[in-house]
Length: 167
Image (cartoon, helix red, strand yellow):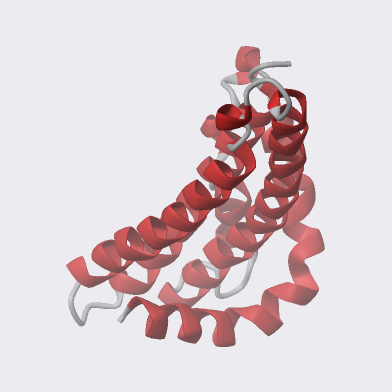
């Protein structure tokens, strides 16, 4: 079910937002860089989608809201992929330091990969649950897109924290 939903959302939203990602990226980048004195990055997740909803002609329709959320999700996904690559490099560097004396602990990169794969499965199942809660109602589109947006944003921040937590 979730794979079908993801495929439908990707097919519908992919071409539209691939060209418009530049609209969301600056807001997402600014959000991700927000310090705790400004409420932290968690406080601005969804702001780009909200701006889209209020600024676009059809932004307050069900489909418009879904596309706005997916547009911001796509911008967070770009950041997530960059943070994952940096986190893998960080884990590999820690593994290299431990390999000679403590090889049993030089498994961080593998642990990170396993965690990311498990997170993807959890995200898909969790968002399918939120989507399914609404049955045949049109709110399912908004709920599913919002779930993907929030979970993707939160994961990109968590990967950054993983990478920077020991530095």
